[in-house]
Image (spheres, one colour):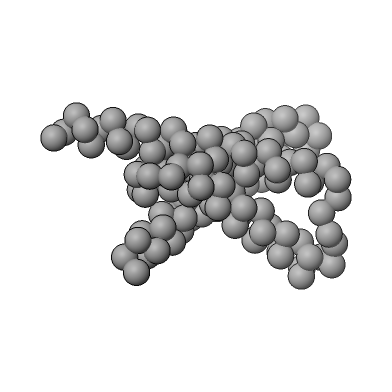
Length: 131
C-alpha cells in the first residue's frame, strides 16, 4: 500500500511540474505574441524545445521522488500527460491525435523516461553521499 502511494505521489509531483511549467511558458509566450511583432510560427521550435524540457523535468522530478524504477515512473508520467492532453483535445475539441501529434507524444514519453532514469540516478547518488 505504501509503495503504490509513493508511486502515485511521485507521478503527481511530475505532472504538477509539467503543467505548471507549461502554464508559465504559455503566459510568457502570450505576452511576447501580444506585445511584440513576433509571429506564432517563428516560435514553433522554441515551444517544442520547451515542451521537451518540461517533460524531461517532470520525469526527472518523478524519478527523484521515487528513487527507483526511473524508466517506469518517467514513462508513466509522460503517458499520463499525453493521456490528459488527448482527453482535453478529444472531449473539448472532438478531435483525435493526428500522425504528427502521435510522434510528438511518443517522444514526450521517451523524454520523460530519460528524465526519470536520470532523476533516480541523481537522487541515489545524493542519498549515498549523505550517509
